[in-house]
Image (cartoon, rainbow, N blue to C red; front, side):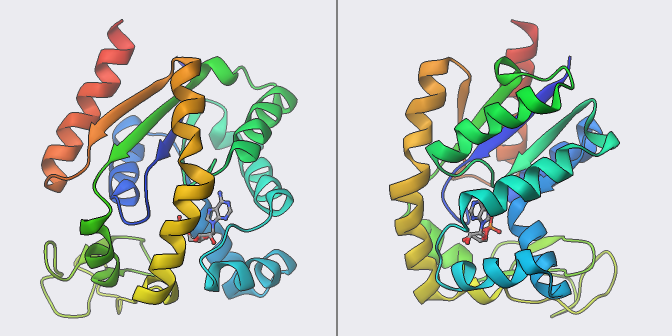
Length: 224
Ligand code: AMP
């Protein structure tokens, strides 16, 4: 069955790591708006120029910009059988925009096929996670200096590329990103609960245990 998986949770809740794994497991494209926007910034596109100011301030990039990025990506053929959205939607307006995009694209995936998964975790543990996060700019693998450090300091285990720290993973910007999450994204929990397609998992566990819970939640949904 074709599915549009979406993931909700505060910054640093671990959805990037888990959605990567899930994309491999289900052989579906992993579409991460944060990475798509950062790619645009790196390439100096018009979208990147607009996005940069918002990302640096921990704010949401305007609706029309992210909606265009998502719509263009979902048009591609590898999205015909379903996809994993990581970081979109992030506000009620974006959730509405996603419904509209699904209608417009008419690829046999409708709003009823959205499966929303919420990563539940207390805010207190997250700042610590964010400031210790490093990632590989080449393959996207995510590390945590305290809990899942690379084998060689500063190098990706898989491709030996120099790891980077995201500019918005400083304490100051992280605090702003939490405020944005509380104000803009949290209302989506009620939105998808009312629609009957929200599942919650405890994200305050090891990567392995979150992964097990994620698979359980998805299996439960599929066997119902
Ligand atoms: P992330 O990599 O998901 O933590 O996103 C990094 C930043 O990119 C966010 O703090 C926002 O500024 C921007 N961003 C990512 N996804 C979205 C979205 N769906 N809507 C608006 N801004 C976004």
